[in-house]
Image 1 (cartoon, rainbow, N blue to C red):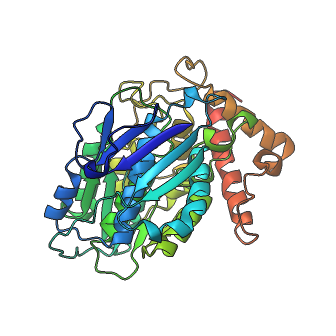
Image 2 (cartoon, rainbow, N blue to C red; image 1 turned 30 degrees about the vertical axis):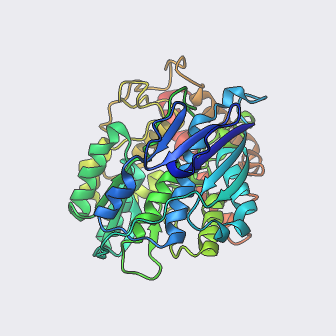
Length: 421
């Protein structure tokens, strides 16, 4: 079992149990073996005029604590090399508010990371920053990653006359891109860009399935700066990636990332409502393929200018900040560009064709996509999906089924064009 404590410096135990990891919020403990979360961030938020209510602030602390545990807990030490058992002590400002939601939170984290979580809430969190609050002028929140979907989401909101406040999670090579897109779409004062700032010595777990929680925490925090009773947080992601059905039986559960899975978003919405965080999470493109998002974007001229400069690759750093062209996100991107009727793909790919592409850097994703396409062609979409849509209501299931079927056809066209099929 992986044991992690997240607390303030003042409440840090004098001695940790054998194998137990500890992190301190927003201030370093200057103690060997103790990590830090968001060093200096609390004070920076106060200076920026943030004054979130306790429920919002504790959601931020909770998400960052989960990210810390996810990063320091190596999957390689588990029995199957993937599924961990994590006992996490989360310091909060108002822990009693969260106790009734403990079991639902544990199950929600299981959906996201595929691990077994045991949560303990303590009163060892930091109080919210008490800045001199001045509301922002924007009317909604939109996540901005530097990827193609989030760019289209921002373009569409602005084209509809909305004034989004963009929120980004610092991501190395994407940081400048995020700032440029936000400034172009909303101006220099329409963007918050933060890092979880989790620092510790020792190896890091590379799968980072919990990292998206920091993104959601930042969005909820940014929403506290809007003078709205229940601001909407837009999560722009195409429907195929939202559901991310396993392409082959071996990629079940969290082996296929569930960062924006509709079930995860639904569970988070219930928890946020329950603890008193008044925001609305919205997946505006959950029934659209990536290609459809491109074709239906409300400013085709701007999309032509920026689309090829966005980042989609799952192995961007592996290929020295170049799209590999052969991972699943790259294939979905290439298929979407091929389906786009108004522009062309000027992205620089390490492999311009799937045929003969090197799989030494990771799984054979083109083969997995090919098997998925063939399964749909020979046995039908329902055989391919299996239980992937078990989470849906009878009302939404036909729409999810349809968008996944259309997404497979976009990928099929790519494989045929590259000569794989």
